[in-house]
Length: 124
Image (cartoon, rainbow, N blue to C red; front, side):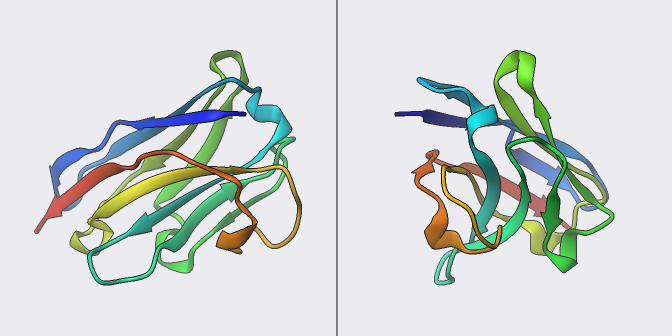
C-alpha cells in the first residue's frame, strides 16, 4: 500500500511561488494517477490538478490554469505541484492523492490513497 507525504507548504505573499511535493513509499507512483486537492475550513475538499500514470494527461481546475503545473519526477518517485502567482484564495490545506482506477480526474471518490496535507497560506 502506497504512503504519501506532502511537503513544501508555507506562508507567502500574493504573487509569490511555492512548489509542493508528494513523496511516495511502499509503491511506485507510475502505477497511479495522481491528484492534488485542497480544502479550507467549512468547505468540501476540491480538485486542483491531476496527472495520468503515464504523465501524458493532465487536468486543472479553471482557477489555477496557467498558474499551477503538476509534474512527475519518476526518478524520485515524487509528484510536484508548482504554484506561481499565488492569490489569497489559494490559501488551503493541500493534499495529494493516488488512485489505481480510472475515470474523470476530478472525481475525488476515485482516489484510494491520501497524504496528510500541507498548509499553504497566501497573504494579500
